[in-house]
Image 1 (spheres, rainbow, N blue to C red):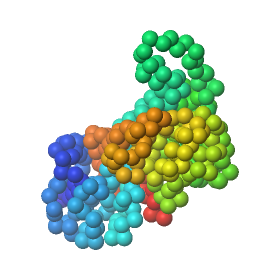
Image 2: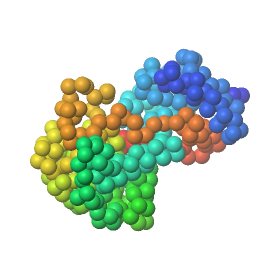
Image 3: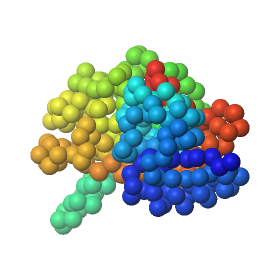
Length: 312
């Protein structure tokens, strides 16, 4: 008997995901019936889900064994009181690779001072702009999940001294790992370049406020591809005006698209990118979905199961 899989996400994604899911499930030996049409909820075995779908009430899906998110962040899904099914977040190799490339690119951009030469094509020979070696530029990463760890390892391989901070203690070879309030203070104090890759939770809302920006070295850089609400926008603008932060490269915001009248657009010390740091690729995401369906059918632990109390 076929396993009923309901694709509850943006309609525009269906053609690409249908083919990718069929291929990935077949490779796992799974007999699945895929559908993007509103099914009999009581017949659904697994739901492939994104918050931009029409489904907001999970109560009718009484047979559903797991909700498999296509998004890495689950802050718009996990708090739903009707969601009693196991929820798995998306961690896929394509998304991780994309994030590593984006973060590494912008760290190197600020480390090397590329903007001065790329934007300064005005006949002025700026030979005085000589960056230190990577080993002399300290990078701190807030968040040591799958994405933060991958970025930390990539930057350490380039010889940057990398400090990582997480809510709970972790150990990663070659990375200075800190945790707790004292650890956060230390991570910020040594952040010549700060990368924020934490999930959005009640504990991380406005984590980077005026008090914490003040802990960073004067003339440092901020890179945020994590979540917009991690940053107190007004506090960041003040830190930029003070020179505490020389430049902030931001990929995520409280409101997206970022409103045209937001001060970030006009600020010379801010680069706005339109939430492109990492995207879920259908081909690699489908492999993760198929593996979790296989695990669910085999009675094995699901991958990337969300802890509802923590919110990630």
